[in-house]
Length: 498
Ligand code: TXE
Image 1 (tube, rainbow, N blue to C red):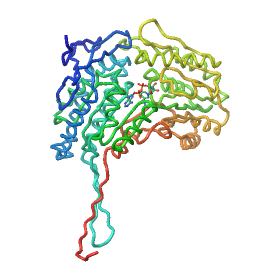
Image 2: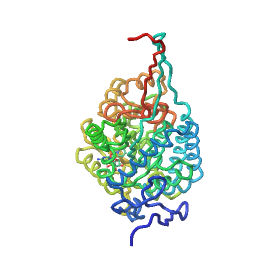
Image 3: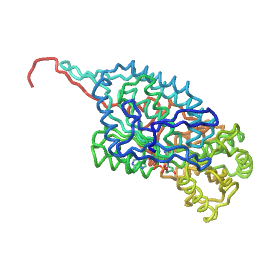
Image 4: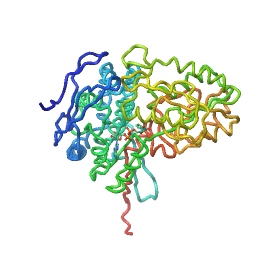
């Protein structure tokens, strides 16, 4: 029996709901040309939740054609005010459907439902924020000579391909769609193959919010097939990607080898979290714990390298171990859960291999280091000490609940080790000294530096990477630059011939 275009599912938190399974193209759920499907697993139980339809190159072509038609058609003439209204409608629908969206996110990704609710609230905030920008994207007039009138227009880029990961499925969905729509583009968004469910439930809200057909198209599928088809497509004008650095490079190559589409990349990290001896220790411990273990360590900005000043190191390690041991790991739908399972078997294996590599290299396991339970992809919060800068666990992104902790003596050393990475997404400094905070924040080569806090992203503030952590900035006013192109118009006023 072939799969229908929706299935009835049930979540512990929000009860029964209708889960779309098709590709969302032209405001309708449709079956792919080849009729292929793939299974979606519940990471807490390793059981199949349902199957969804898989897009191949042919479906990417259809979705891109729909986005092109909308872009060259009525969408082009849509007023900025109306674009803003649509994003505001969508934000309100996210809020109205918060419980169900959060529940689907927990079911599919494994994140604690309390955290998923925060994600959905932030996604609504992001969509509303860019709704506010839609009618404030302005050009300017530039005076050059008396007989010319010159103006600059900020025009949409066109059809935007957007490829998102599985760690914050719906938050990334909003980070991508919000600014693209505010600037007047159309979108083909591919969700991650591990977490397609929320993106499809949210696709229903696109239609309900009143978007015209073809403006936002959402497809499920695999990176090597649908993702690669988007990044090498000759009629996609821009690609925005969040994911691994390895794939980021492939996307740049695909863009270079096709139509030189504009590319923005938000990639991995190995962020330092630096604690000075004058820091408020309770505060620092809370944020260091949150910095690495939030979202099960599956954050591109996770504070995975912890450096503590020598004089407080022993005390800090003891207190940090105590704190991390209290993180409740388990069923994402249970009330007190902080950490759920890793997203997939592949990620679970990758993390367990890193833990083994740390142990083999002689690092000391302060806590954790094991799988938790025997069902689901749960891993104990793990802290390694006795590490050296050349160890794999200190150099490479683990993307799990695993960190290293080591000591430093001076501010200069903290800056040096903080910067000793090919990445540059985020960093943090904990200190009561304003001078230390500013000096170190300015010296760290990272797109975001937090002081006495961690992971406190906000849609009003730009986010993105230095070095190999990416190209371009998402969020804030900066993101608008990713989704507009500048046109110079120069008009000769006099009639003198050249
Ligand atoms: O990422 P991929 P994976 C890092 C993290 C993690 C590692 C691997 O270190 O352990 O990446 O995770 C699509 N052309 N991050 O394998 O493969 C894919 O379908 C076009 C950091 O899941 O990069 C998915 O939609 N697209 C990160 C998206 O890329 C391709 C978040 C991410 O998948 C493609 C996730 C291709 N050739 C992982 N191959 C962050 N920055 O937050 C894959 N994709």
